[in-house]
Length: 105
Image: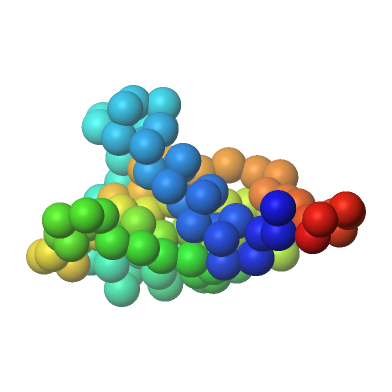
C-alpha cells in the first residue's frame, strides 16, 4: 500500500489526539494553556518548532496541531474556538519514517 506524507501525518495526528484525550498525555495540572499566538511564539523561540500538520475534530471546535523542530523536539497543541491553546504532549526524537517502495506500490 502506498502512503503519502499527508496520509502519514493524518494518521499520526489522529493517534496522538486519541492518546491525548484518553489521558496518556500531560495531566490537566501539567498542561500549559495560553493564547494561541503566544504559544506559537514560545514554541518557535524556545524550541525552534514549526507546525507540520493540523486538523479539526469532528465537531469543528478543537484544532489539533503538531509542531516539530529539526533537532527532533515535538509538541502537540489543542486550540479551542476562543483561541486558547493548550500544550498537551511533548517530547524528543521525532522522526519522519520514509515509505519504502516494494511490490504492489
